Image (tube, rainbow, N blue to C red; front, top):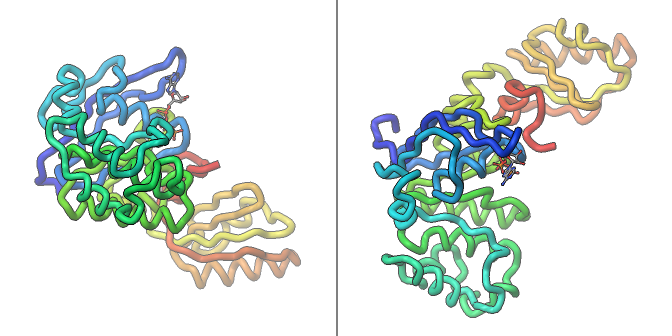
Length: 308
Ligand code: ATP
């Protein structure tokens, strides 16, 4: 991946809204053909970053190059070559699927035949349905499809699956994986860990306008955790010290009434935990054992969960 050409180069980007430093000095690049994710909680600065790259907002300082073009100067040239997922409420409710795809295609010099776009997101059977009568998942799929209408080199998807039920989310993931197989470069923002882990080659984790970690999902987890996680609730909290002292434990995170122990050895720590509970007549509940994931990386780096 590292030998591939950079299609996006962002360097020392800053953008403040009054006292809010929405983007506070970030630099990253996106390579040809990769799915690059920006992951972070609400207000982290993802949308501001992406919209600066798309030419929709102006930064206070920094540079952005897209496909070798200075994206802060030649905005029009960039717009012809990128695809942007439009937010659905802006669509004409009385146009049907096919009419909407045709309409958006007509806005570009070059466009993909509408039947191809409609097939791509499995809306063929609904092509004559008015936008207002589509289900939420279908509307979202259509908005993603429209990012493809000008056969762009880079596609920007801003929280493409927010608000969808799990089934609709999976369907949309398949659509995005199809884009990737077609060799497109995709930059997507999300606050779903699972989505980032499944779809992205690399991710930048953002918080408070900063990139706090960047790498492949597996690489980030490996870098921060050689361990697994034991998660549970416990009556009669024994105190952090007692938990940290349990055999095998490398770190402890407490979140409300939930406790997460990170350990290099599940059996050793589990048996120590059971002993501790029984010595204090405490009860354990909701116990689960899992590999560390991106959520754990985020908690470790920021002390909080990505979603409230
Ligand atoms: P979300 O997941 O909620 O979309 P985000 O990571 O995309 O969040 P941004 O929308 O970029 O974050 O917002 C970053 C910060 O900048 C937030 O504190 C937000 O309130 C603020 N902000 C964003 N746009 C504006 C604006 N036009 N005027 C003032 N403040 C803004």
